[in-house]
Image (tube, rainbow, N blue to C red):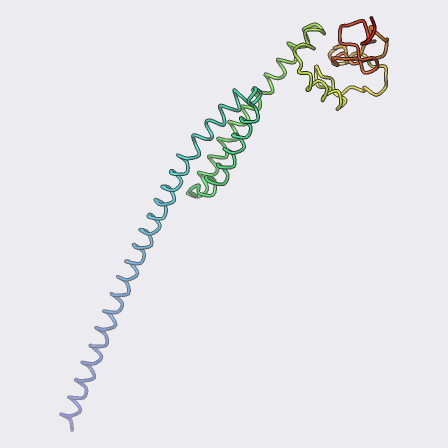
Length: 226
């Protein structure tokens, strides 16, 4: 009986040792599996970042020339004869930037987006300040010219559109043109209305013909009068 009990105890001890070995092996395998999982996750994240960066660079290579050309058109051609083409291309480049590039900006904690936003703000802000200063300088230079010279520099359609908006064609400030007595701009002094030399009606100095008699600008004779 004692011998049998001893054998049973030895078997139990052997099984417990075997169970302990299996448990230790499982723990070691689980630790190795966790380490491999962390390594694989890091490699996957690195590969994903590289792929995102590669896609971003491809799209940047596509949109950057468009943005540069759009910037050149904005600076040089936005007020030229080809302004419809220039502005159309500018809007197309902006659409390509916000649709094709911005959604694919690598995050990196948002630093790239913040950097791009800061750079664009600085560039657009500087351009706006420069354009405003140039506009004010042109306005000051224009106000030093005589009425005739200032009217010659103004586009006919632009002048008529500004008058229709109750705005001085010369300085673009608000002027009350409905009172029937304001003949000169109170801000810059440019002549807005004068008597027609042919019929005496009050006519705009920016109109080519008198609205009352049809006499041409600078002519003292109405049409049909010999």
